[in-house]
Length: 124
Image 1 (cartoon, rainbow, N blue to C red):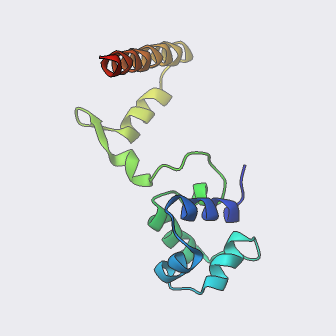
Image 2: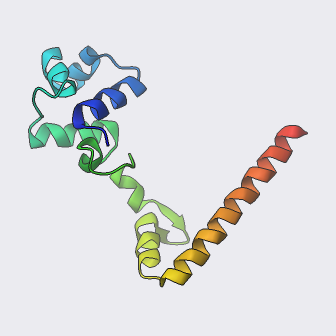
C-alpha cells in the first residue's frame, strides 16, 4: 500500500493542483508540501485532519491504512428508506456468512443487470 506522501501527491494531482496551490489552501509553504510528499516529515494532527477534510477522505486513507478514499460523510448518506450507509453496513456485519454470500450474489446480479441495460441503451 502507498505511503502518506504518495497518497497526498496523488490526491493533489487528481485535482490538477500544484504544490503551490495546495500550500496556499493549507496555509503552509510549498517546501512543506514537498516535504510531506517526499516523506521528509509528516503533518501534525491538526494539519492531517485539514488535509483529510480538504480532500474529503479519512485520515486513515491519507496514512495508507485503508484502501477506500471514501469521505466519512458517506456513512451518513441515506440510501434506503431512512437507513444510512452506516446502518446498512451494520446490518450486513450482523448477518450470518451464508446470508452475506446470498447478498453478494444478489448485488452482483443487480449490478450485471444494470450494466446490460446500459449496454443495450447505448446500442440503440
